Every structure is written in C-alpha cells, then in structure tokens.
Amino acid sequence: MTLPQELSGEIVVFVQSVVGAMGLQLRVETSSEGEALHINLDGEDGGVLTRRGGEGLQALQHLLATAFRRQLGDEYRVVLDCMGFRQEKDAELRQMARFTAERALSMGAAQELGPLNPYERRLVHLVVADIEGVSSESVGDAFLKTVIISTRS
Image 1 (cartoon, rainbow, N blue to C red):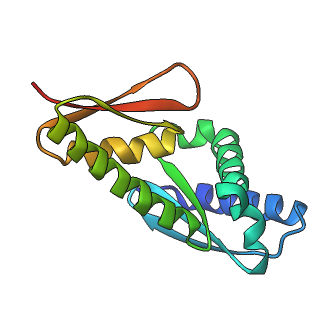
Image 2 (cartoon, rainbow, N blue to C red; image 1 turned 180 degrees about the vertical axis):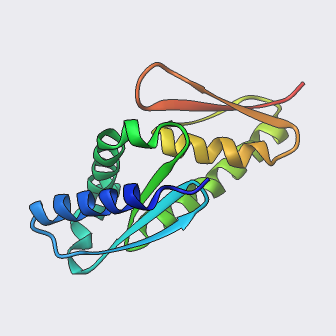
C-alpha cells in the first residue's frame, strides 16, 4: 500500500515551510518505497540539521511525525534525511546491531543497545530478526528505550 499522493504533497509542503521558517536554503527531494515516503534535504545549510549528532534532523523528524500522526496511522512511515546523514547513521546502527547480536551469541549473555528512539529501535529489531539464535526486545517506559539482544533458548 503506497502513501496517497495528496498526503505526500502535504508532507512535502510542511517540511518546506518549516525549513523555510528556520531560514534554511534546502532542496526537498522525495522517493517512495512501499508504505514509506523518504524525504532528503540537500543544500549548503544542511549542516544546521546534522550538527550534534543530527539533533536538528531528529527534532524535525519528530515534529513531522507528530503533525501527521493521524493521517499516517500505523500504515505509513515518513523517513527524513539530510544530505545522506541518516542513511550513514542507519548503516552504522545496523552494523552495531549485528556486532551486538554476534557478541550475545558468543558470550551467551544478553547485550544492551541504547538508549534509542523508536526509529532506531525498529532498525535494530529488523536486523536481529534476520540473525539465527538471537532475539531482541525494547525495555523502558520513555521515548528513548534500551534494546536487549539475547540468545534464544
């Protein structure tokens, strides 16, 4: 199921208006992949969003998710990136999840990753699901939670 074109347009306009209100000159590029809309911001002002580990990008992602929570529901996702920053961080997180799962297998003891936001936790759970002999679960009761990777009995 793909994201409706009208909703995609509304989301892009929203992102453009927030970025514009911040005084940033960034191009908005979109692509769709199944139920996900990928938005990449590109331009000289991108560093503003990627500083301090991408705090600005995460804040904009959170604002976007909050603004369109009802329309997106559980069916659709919007992934916001800036100059490939998130893509690189995602690759690092996937590698860390694989490493941690292998460590759990070799040591026979549960390993922790975190604290992670919901998007990051989802990536870790997807990676761990593809590795034989380990499982993962999120623990905590806040926005940021820890993922426990343990061996399956």
